[in-house]
Length: 172
Image (cartoon, rainbow, N blue to C red; front, side, top):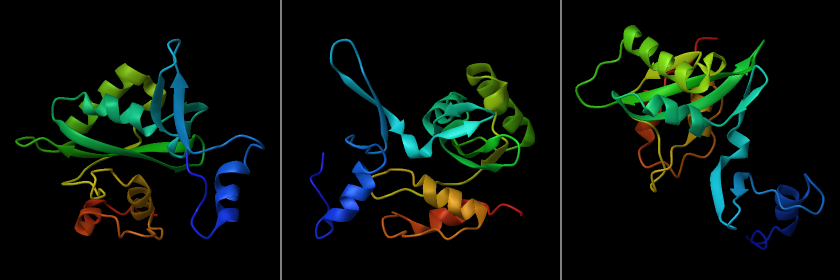
């Protein structure tokens, strides 16, 4: 746990200590098992609410990555008028596999089988690469912003800024 931000104590207090008085809210979802071990499940700020169900990107990504043709995947939520959030997946395929509507349907069927029909991705895009930091973390906020045509913010941590160009911009 950090003790503050350099030269900005108030920002630290506002960011981590103001949402729930007396509780440090850091943005990660975690659980404590009966033996006292912590398990980090993912970021709470990435959580999507789809038709009343809360799901993290990691859960959807795990289901999609279960398909033999999938090398890696990034999942984001985008606003949906009826459902709250719509699930959008950006999929990098393994060598020798080609994206097609039939493959997208096959991947969606796998997600339905593992997570339920409510959590089937509304959009599934085949991309050549995902934007990542130099340490290999997928930058979902930049993917979401690019896809929605919003400002992408600070991209200085990206290993390869051209990877963001692989993300399609959604038609309005």
